[in-house]
Image 1 (spheres, rainbow, N blue to C red):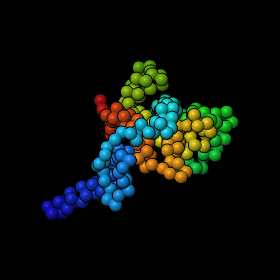
Image 2 (cartoon, rainbow, N blue to C red):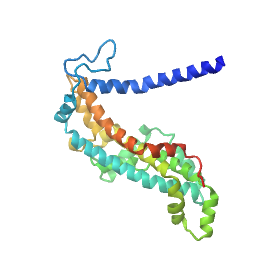
Image 3 (tube, one colour):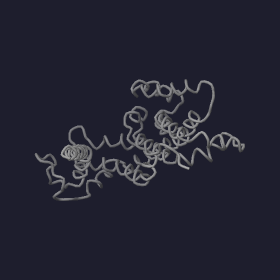
Image 4 (cartoon, rainbow, N blue to C red):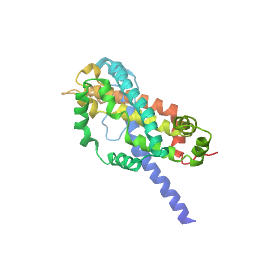
Length: 275
């Protein structure tokens, strides 16, 4: 009984530690964005409750940089990435999981192999490819490399592979072709995983900094993550202003996750098809 109690206490102590390490910085950033100009941000003991709460820092972000233009650019890039992964990764995942053809295992192995390579290895070839297509300094050029992520393809393959083979066999007996099986059997059973892919694609495109910084040269086409660098000057920077900009960048992710969390957790828990 004592051993069980110790394990119980240790488990919740570790959960509390993880909570502090993950949520603590976010709360500190939120608190900093709401602090007035007269408050000391870098105190010996972090203060999470602003003494002079204000929203002026968020208004100053809009005055310092064209934040709405940057948000629009980021939304365009994220929409292209989400559409590409939702369609491309779903089709590729279905082909790898349900279709039978020569070389399919080799293709799956090559897909797994691409996950081993770090992004820094392929970024030069990606830039050369985008430049040869005339897409440098365009939002399409920013979104193109992430339009179909191999991780999302493997997630969709796992979801499609969980569908019992008997369902496909019954559909084939009824005369259904590959497209009909994909639409009527495959898609209804992987909606949760598609939500996972949508969230991962949006977060990846929205938070990306290095690739847009390399491709884009016109400040009017900067995404939000790249444009936020202007909040930190060469000789001075206001941590309240930077924190407000970070919270503005975080808000769309929170809204998307709140809207799709029910489907997200369903997709994470998908391991089999019922009925």
